[in-house]
Image (cartoon, rainbow over all chains, first blue to last red; front, side, top):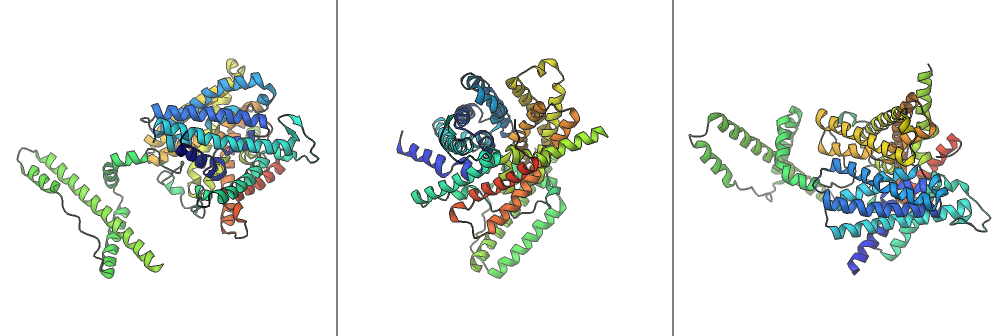
Length: 343
Length: 197
């Protein structure tokens, strides 16, 4: 394996550990990783699930819409879990019986959906395989560590064998013990990362910039508010490229008056700001040949009047949308400059 | 009267006495991540409540069929995921086509449907042999439990974010996990013991 792949694995497994620094896939860890045996079960299932589902996604599901892919991940997860469950029942019946409710639930582990949406749909097979292995390795590492700590302190055993430990904290076997162990393990990892990789900032993986936002004034926007559950848009980039213009037209066709007024206001503000600041950096965008072409075409007599009108209205829409975009951009730019001056 | 009592008891059980997130750990990732973005709380809570309630009711109804009742854990997991998938497609259609929600909003439906909390509810109903009324109660309760969990974690996150006495290594997710552990301990204390399933 090349150095590049090794560094990717270390980065994905340790520095950007999904459980410790992104709080993904916590449920199976706190609920199931209570001993080394169950931790091994969980790790094995996760590695197989991650690898198979990510590869399937990369190979076959790229063209499927994100909303349907999520369904496929869950179904595939359950289908992979069934033989695993039977296998574990054969080798470790007692442990399997203990965690029988959690095994099917792992099928909907958020870690898998997140990595498929973030990575598998955007990359090739090789990169996807490395990502699947590294993230499941990182996940497994934490699961095994948590399972071991909880088994030693909670049950006083290691892999089922009694050890001479005077203290037994059986509360650690409950979910709150899992959270507690995760807290201390993540602090330990953070310290190690800061010593070994001083330039890395693992805490940046969990974005806390929006915690102060109110949740009360958004009830009315239930189906309008932007929402990004995966932290990144999986296929949004591709969709945006293709449908950007159409989206803008759709938006304008909805035409809610307050929005238009707002845009006008923004335009006015922008103009006054422009005059005040006397900025000359913003160059005027040259009119392209499309306008001339359109005039030529529309002047031809063969085109029926309704079609002509449609073309005219469409071009006006485009123009107004373009103006709006331009004004928003300029306003944003001037605001940024203002902020920069204030600083 | 019995119906209301059963519904109320099951809802309280899922919401407070055995808060599925804190005492069971189900949906913990979604709750912790959502608590960092509280403005998305209501859409997510509504969707989770819808999914958990509808799925648990359908699964309890299916449980009346002898062939399904006699199935083991694997069989039940297949049935539950099949029901969840169908409900997901129906809700997706309603949200996308009837309500005309934005694409990004449509994407949240998947996160609300396929998480450990929603899938755990029919399993808990099956293990506890809940009736339909109790299944409705536990479905509604799990949605509300999610909201309670997100709000309580969010309050803590706000304080933790401003606190300057936290050691450098514990800032961020380590402090969050320990805070969630304390909350989980409190809810476990209310219930008397952890969820043993």
